[in-house]
Image 1: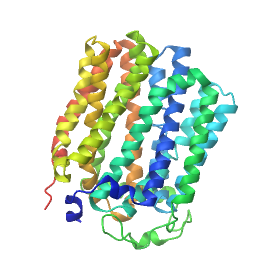
Image 2: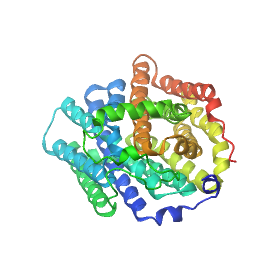
Image 3: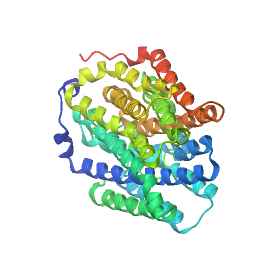
Length: 423
């Protein structure tokens, strides 16, 4: 396994896998739709309330409810067919888009609906993570995880940049109809091209080379060997107790929370600085542009061991630029700061091997669900906390505080960030 992870793979090897292409396409369409929906609701809320806090809350309304699914339902990711879970998840999102398009719901009801369906997101993301761990090995797994993250970033970039203009052109309801159509296509792709492995793994090899635990061989029943809720709680406890897993989760999700907080304040910041709609859209996409650059450069140019050594420097690159927004920088400098902070997010590439090796093989699906749940939950809390700051402080200062917090957290966690010996 060590040789597999130290031998550099190529993106071409990853895309040669049919099931990966299906996961990739579904994720592209799903994240793009989610982003368009969030922007549409955020624009609507800010137009009606002019509140930075409520706008930040709207952009992250799909995050916090994921804690419910991650805490109580995540075991489903290891108990049922990934194809069923993923295609059903996209189908439910399609249904939400149709209700938002034709239901003429009040803002509060629309946000509640988005929050409700978000409870199931950890199950589908855990299932997708399980697929990648089953079909990719060694450094192809690291690059596959990178591409999965990269496609999400690219979709967010397009959604953020085009979302505002699309809402102006189509209106909120028709924009929701567009998101429903994209989710439907993602569901169909997942159903057709994700071959259906057994509902639970009985003994096949995983990407880490270990067999799944025999206890996972129970059928897909919700009550076999205990309820899904009970198994989820037990699995989460086992993951937290596994050596190194909790620290690796924290290193991956805490900096992301500060990054989300800085992005969630961009609409009120742009309004405060009197930036136009085009400038605002570009700023919303700037972090995603940086993420795209960082992932491609770090993923292609550096060997696996070097990526692990770059984790700490890249984290500092991610946290430092927002601090400069305490000053009234010219627009190009603000955009550059967000691009640079996005580049730093490539630090995640250096943690993929360690995380996969740290989790028990029979809990891989649940481990990805727990990681996603923790990330999304903290990403939901971060914008709320710094949104409160922005209610009482200049928005630029609140954004600068996200950078200070990110750098401070990085320094406090530096012992967990140190690369592990390869041999």
